[in-house]
Length: 140
Image: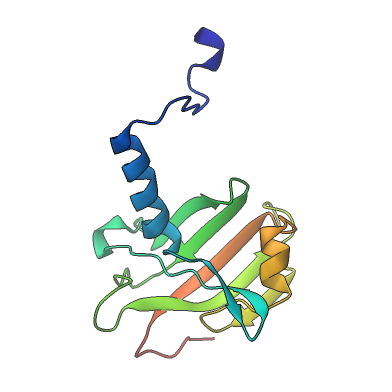
């Protein structure tokens, strides 16, 4: 169907396609990106990214929830599992994808409430998640 060519439509998923999409989701965001902490929704991205998968500038981009541009920044290109794995150390939330100044900035592995619910409600167009090895301090 020529009008649909190239739009990413998958009318029927084969078993291998469904498995690939499942693996991709786990690689990009982890198994359970949204978790309840103290009865409140939080966002905990736990990607599984090898050192060779990072772009030359130490970034990796993906689309979260079909609409939110997520940029992982990991200048050291440290893998995100194993000893000294890189973890999210800082969150920057952008109302518009083209914004250069974040609407909100947080330090830590987990994005707290109510901002996690706002991400799920697509109130932000982009997220920058800066990674740091678990044994390292985030440089200011």
